[in-house]
Length: 240
Figure (cartoon, rainbow, N blue to C red):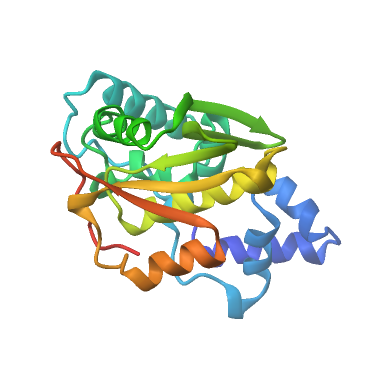
């Protein structure tokens, strides 16, 4: 169905007396999606990849069996007719995470890099700094949100949550910051928890200049720690 077809269908339902929320429930879309089909000035010019494009074949068949199983599962769910939003909710992941498993050029090559960085560098770094590690990859549910804390540690009387990223492209940084903000907002002790992002020191992106780090620390109370590591790192693709 083209965008013009979508607009005609939505406007017909609206003319019949249905509200935006009723139309959204009827067509299985969000109210925002319906609204953009009712108003020409907000209508998209083309189909969004995250909503309408079929999954692409694997760009490379992964050698990592866990990653291969992950990709196959997401592709199967998409072929079953589930939307990106439904898959993300079903798996407790972000829409970008789903998109990266369905869109060839964003496909991850290895699931283990981030975990290796966490195990080989971040955990020893925190222990050397005097942290007591309480949990790793801790998943918690708050209403409709499923949050994962890569590392939960204690330093003195303070609880810390560390988001671990082996690369730092725009999407990863956005995800890390959003995840930490949700931890602060939704955890019962969130206002008392300290937040930080751990990145490999040798892959500090140019965008993370000192003024940006200072602003994150001052306005969002999120620190960025640059941890030495000799292992492989994800390339920064420069995307925002």
